[in-house]
Length: 560
Image (tube, rainbow, N blue to C red; front, side):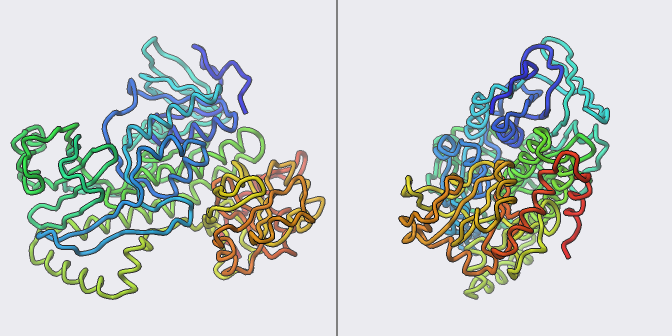
């Protein structure tokens, strides 16, 4: 939905809905979500253009699902390497453990290599679809003050200073976030004393398609295949080696010599020294200012979750900001962003930190004990399956926030978890991913029932007015039967059997799905009217009705 206000562009920049600070992947993804909802959005970036060197190297299935939701998946997929295997090896390059998940429950492979500059460029190009979104380069935020009804932001641009009044400001401006400092929010955690040299190379000198993490006590190192013939090497730098050595070609040649036969022939794109941080902001929201991505949390690289955690932030926050700005929800819905994202971000930080500690020992005796323990664990089939399938990865599960648990009869409840995304069939499309049927907003999905009949006329009408889509899922054999057809209900056939398998494990058969595909509420069919009404009272307060803030805040409390 395009916006109609001239304040979306032009030199004045006087009045906008959302100001995003930072044109990295998180800010650009968030801008795409807001742009699709017609929200007047300005993205400001102090750099003159996108960063043109590889940084993040791994995308997970959740991020690809988000890119699918903003209509850019076909543009992004050519820059990825699906089903990338991660192998952990010892000092002699013998296999210790392997991560090679094959599950595609969310519609996409769980591990994917990618070229971040090219993916970020597609996210930027996607904003051209939205007249209400503008990106300003070489624009640095100098001041940021929450005035209660809006935020006043002072920006320095190439043509001089400008003052922006925004209803909300989202800081996606990295670990040194200016926005976070303006909010007065702490950044708690630790910074590892260990440094790593990262070298990105064109014309991949090895060519094999996966990732190898060498837990070598002499010098732990990593070799990563990136799409389009790029190879990344990472090497631990010892305490007696200064950062300046990274600029010495002879030092880089010594690092890469054990891995490539001709280190002097490498076509180096860039080299840089990094330290690893394990930090999280004391709050993701303060009034009309919010944080996302590295501005909200930093984590070591070992599980490739820094980039992906930021995309999760954008997916969680984007629909909520759009709902508040367009008047579909009360502003206190934004409190659920911190409540929902903090626990999961913390879990990812802890996992990444733990993996780093496991692979980084430089004491040979400690490394030998570790190797023996890892090999012994890998010999146990359930443990091997657990690691191979990446089942150790924490998955979002919201016990609190913008969810309603009390109507569910399933154990465990699916409420607060991501719903699956299988390939389904409709009357007009033989193969389509489920999210493309559910649409970009809320959806009500019933197994083996007509949503209109289950919800009743009044609640059905309210959800229809709220803009929800209604989907009736049934065995594919029943798809030709038209006696229960309704113009407002889309029928999907369970083409692969994945939907029935999901419902096989549940007592609940009616799902209310949020735009980020989290289950907002679930119930058996007879409870659907009560659950549907309660959710609507939360997300779509009626004009003149009771204060919506109390309802949203009650949802943020632990479920009974």
